[in-house]
Length: 471
Image (cartoon, rainbow, N blue to C red; front, side, top):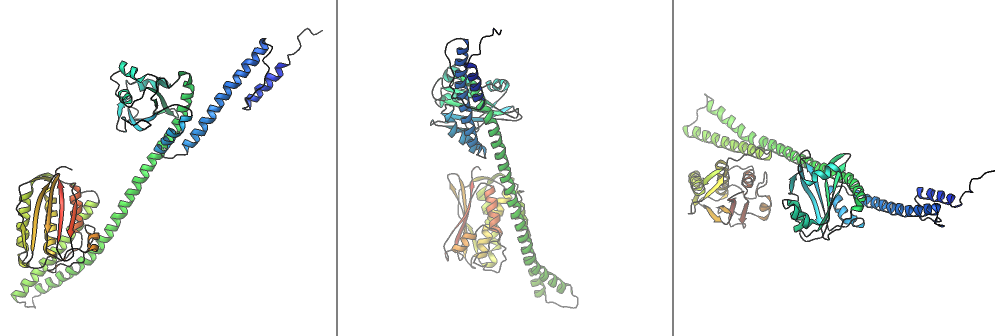
């Protein structure tokens, strides 16, 4: 005869309920009475189902949120999505992100957003990891909750980051370490304007959030770095493409503008050396002057091509020193006045007070020479070219005024560009390849200044540039 008690009918129902929970079904109907040991098992099973349902819903919600966040590519996009969506699972008025740099020795603020009007910790904020409270968080891998930031600051007044956060109006904070694939990458900070916003009972949830965000943030950071590298490569490719186009233009200019004078020089030299050809002294002098004129043009062309090539390749180096600007202009004007004498053109320096600038004297003289020689070149014989310098609140303005044909609207669009030939033609047959003003622009900008031209057709032109007191 079997003396064992008959099986309790509640047991099969409990087993079925457990199977339901394995399938993610938590709306259980299990008997909890009578309140004997088996009944208490039913009560425990029902409470477990409710806890599991809450946890299950929370995990589902986090997965939905992280899926939306993970749709962002660049790190800033990812973090903006975090700020927008995580309100569903965690309270905050501010979120900040800091990443580890310098082989994990330095912590640098990378991003922050806040609903509050003040944001004091920006991307420039850094602090050493060693000896900080963040080092402890990283070592333990546990989130840190500070539910009374003003009290924490009073206890640790040397904490600069806490002082800044409190100054923003925040009362409590949650700091979670970010560890992706076992490698620490930084921290995410949730902060609230309410004290005691974070419950220690939710640490497991906070840790789960940090685990999810670590992978997403690392992905966004890597994509952002790749995007920066891609932009840099594209920019470099554009520069190389431009240099290649410039090289082709140089070759075309050299082939066109050097072939003719070289041919003329060769032919003239052959005539001068031909012992059977008797040339009058005046003709020999003219041939020699032609050779000098053509070689001068070729030398100017080659120097301009080399200057543009050097500047475009990033090899322009300035040897800056303190310069007496008035003395430099006076010296340049005297030289150009002498050169312009055969054309009957006068070059005058307007009286100006002495002034000092910090610049490369050779490059600055190159700019001044170019503008004055252009003014003489395009001005009619017997006209006046005026050079003046004026002080303004942040530096000096140097201007060269001519009485030439002025600039058309189309001319103004091409000014200071490579190989820009204007509608006006030199009045004395001088040569031009259109590089001088482009070189002027590059040199002035390298000094931190600006260039420009003021003109109306038929009323002359004023070409000017500025030199700041400091770049």
